[in-house]
Length: 311
Image (cartoon, rainbow, N blue to C red):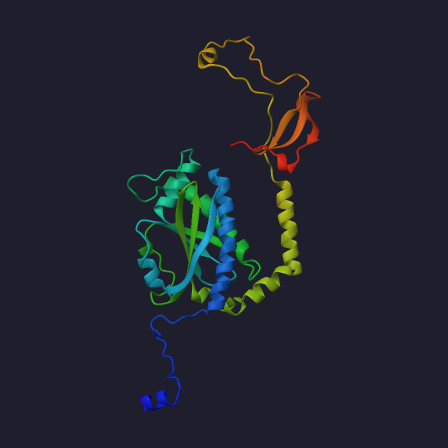
C-alpha cells in the first residue's frame, strides 16, 4: 500500500518524535518573547554590574530553552551560588545561579582587587555571600523592570544556597524555562542561569507574545515609568573635576620635594581649564571663588565631536 501511494504521487505523513516525559509547555513564539524580556534583564543587570565593578560589563542572552527541573539541577556545579526568588503576585519561585568563577571575580573587584579567580574554587564564606547579596538585590530589581511591561511584579530575594541539591522548587519532572545569560568584561566572561518553573508562568502564558509585549509598552502606566526613570536620572550624581595643570618631574626631584617647594605647571594664570564630567572634557572654565568656596566659571561648551577622554 505504501508503494502504491508513493507511485500515485502522494506524500507519506511526516512523523515527529514526542517525549511524553518532557512535554513542551511553551511555543516558539512564547520562547522568543521570553528571550526579548530577558535581553532587557541582561542589559539592566550589566549596567548595575558596571557600576559595582567600575568596569564596562556587557550582557546578552545565549539561549532560552525548556527542560525538566531535575535535568537542570543536575547540570549545575557544586558548589555554586543560587539565589531563590519569589515573584509576587505570581505564585511559585525561581532562581538565579551564578557560577563560582563569576562570583569570585565580582567579589574580588568589589573588595579592591583586579578581579581574579582563585586557583581552587570553594564555597563562599558568609562575608562573601553578604557581598553577593547586594549584587543580587540589584539583579532582582533589573528582573522586575524587564517584566513590568508584561506583568507588574515585585520579585524578592528569599535566600541564598550553595548546594543545588538543597534547592527543590518543583517536583523533578516538572518543566522549567532556563535562560542562559553571558556576561563579559575586559577579556573575561561567564554565564548566569535563570530558572523559572512553568507553573509560575502558567497564569501569564497567554500574554507571552510579542504583540502583547510591545503593545503594552505605550500604555499610560508605561508613561509613568518613563517619568520615574527621568526623575531618577535627574537625581543621579556624577563626578565633576577641574584639572589645574600638569608638570613633569623626575623621580629624584619628586623624592627631594619639601614643604615650601614650588612645582611649576604648564598652565598659565589666565588659561582656561578643562572641566571633566566623568572621564570626558565637557566644558572649559576659569578657577575662582564664590564666598569661601572654590569654584569654576564655565567659559565654553565643548563640541561633542571634540570631547577628550581619559584612557
